[in-house]
Image (cartoon, rainbow, N blue to C red; front, side, top):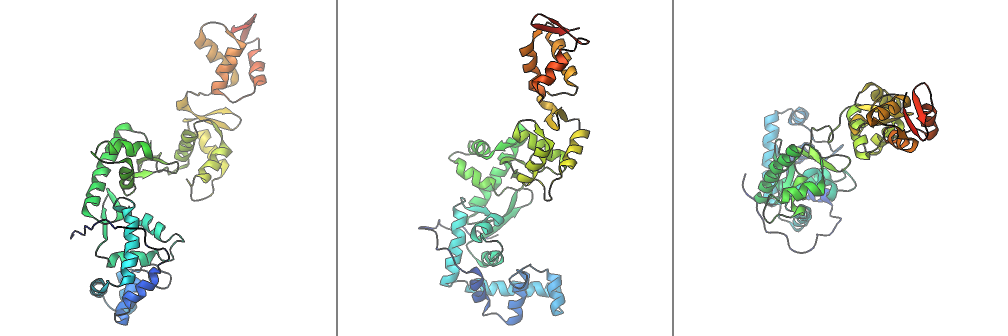
Length: 353
């Protein structure tokens, strides 16, 4: 594709409030009515504002999809040649400003959210204006860069370099990282690169994504894109860093948007019960086995503590050890500890009978 490198825009951000749809009507005005209507349908600029396929449009007019493609191509070339009005330049500068604030490249979805904060009122018009622009490039690369807008070839190249470096860092570490930590590691691989630049390029990557807790990793990792209840429970417990009641886990899943549908606590409880990765440590309270928790009654826990100690222990030491792996009351521990069938007390010390 032909390079569209441009000089960085000088001055302040163009004024807000430009009517992108009004500009589109201005651009379409010189076209024949059928050509204008076909463009509106193709780019979602009319009615429900959903872009229509070539086949769908062809069916509306009784023409082939290839003929629709030709009409769209001819109309876009005509518009691109005439896209020189002050209104067009003003809208174009506003879009370019958003791109340059992100170091020369921005994912299309993020750019549209910035330029159309009310959501979908003018998003298709914005995309159409970008298609007409000779200064803005639409770029992407499968499994590397999401569909993005750039103002220079160099920004696209740098983003691809960042993609490879970021993936390599994450795969070697095998754990998600905070955005600041990953961007620092990425920047260190490029002389003169800042963390801010690295972070801007990270946001357009196809395989490196941020999870709901702000951690970055490979998009198909369970900690980044958890699909089932088990994966969501595991992620919540890891991020909270402490045992939780199953109802709290369900609330956290919904709070952080990990599920499109409302999470039912009983569904979560059922998953916790059947999965060996989770350990019941109190009434409805579960922990991750990898934290060192294990199954068993309070009596079993006390027996393990005393067996591992190989010497009698005082009450307070036993209580501290139990509370590390179980969420129970002190009285519950003492009732079990004072069972003479299993434990022997000599002075202030307890041992296995």
